[in-house]
Image (cartoon, rainbow, N blue to C red; front, side):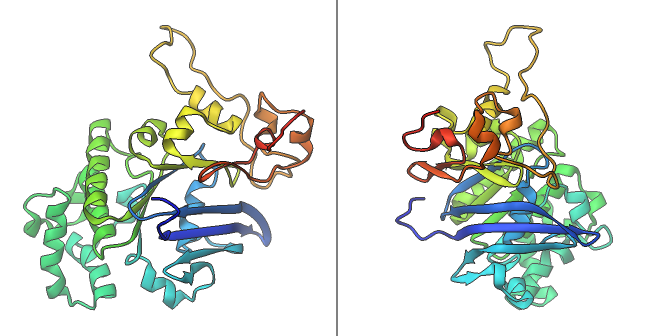
Amino acid sequence: MTDKAAPILEITGLSVSVSRDGAPTKILRDISYRIYPGETLAIVGESGSGKTIGALSVIRLLPPGGVIDSGSVLYAGKDLAAATEEELRGVRGAGISMIFQEPMTSLNPVMTIGLQLAEPLMEHKGLSYPQALPLCEKLLEKVGITDAKSRLAQYPHNFSGGMRQRVMIAMALACGPDLVIADEPTTALDVTVQAQILDLIDALKKESGMALALITHNLGIVAQRADYVLVFYSGRVMERGPAAEFFKSPSHPYSRALLNSLPKMSDKPGEPLKTIEGLPPSFDEALQGCPFSPRCPEAFDKCRTAEPPEFETGDRRGSKCWRSERGFKI
């Protein structure tokens, strides 16, 4: 998980727009980061900050009207941003897999679990359905589903929410991917089931050596499980860095505001929770300066007129804040 190893994925200057009624709206702006083997990278930020679009862009599963305007997505020596659809089919589910947020809408309700698990093995490994079934049974056992053989003949409605998410994890791991992208994988689950699912993902990650990109709004999960953090705001990475350093000394005012909004043991009973004043800008809003400046308690005149570039603040650390500029003075 250092720069001495080759990254599994390297994203440079990625910008994405989505067109509605012929008018393009910029969703992602100049996103750059790397993921290394065995690393858990957490992508955090408020709802609507661009986290999910950022993940879907990696394998070009963009919404209707979505296009990559610029930048590169390097995986296994190939730029996925410029790859053909046939080349992408060879990567999706094989080299890079996704665990989606809501398993009930991600699983096909009229197909058996066995057939859905077998699909990636048939597509990427060239197996027939009968050949794939024993592997599917082992996959269900690996993710903690008992009586796996009979379960293969059942449908998604026969499974609880936690079990459906285990099926999604099994599907994501079927072909031994280098990277799994998990988009809020426990949002719809009970707290106890959330911990079980995250423990399962961690154990399987350690067993296989794969990398994990975890999209979440839960900073407690990030503190416990992440090696590296990206902080998204208004389609930009405002801060990036090792998780331990992020929690110890966040560089960006938005990061500090996120951490300050967490409940603390020292909070007095009845004391209101701390919040970030104001609302994030919409993607089609014309902005001047830093997009966080209208809500930022540390903003000064330059913040409101000029958007900052990313400033290096340490080893694999960066912050898009004028206060992070070397030799900063107001």
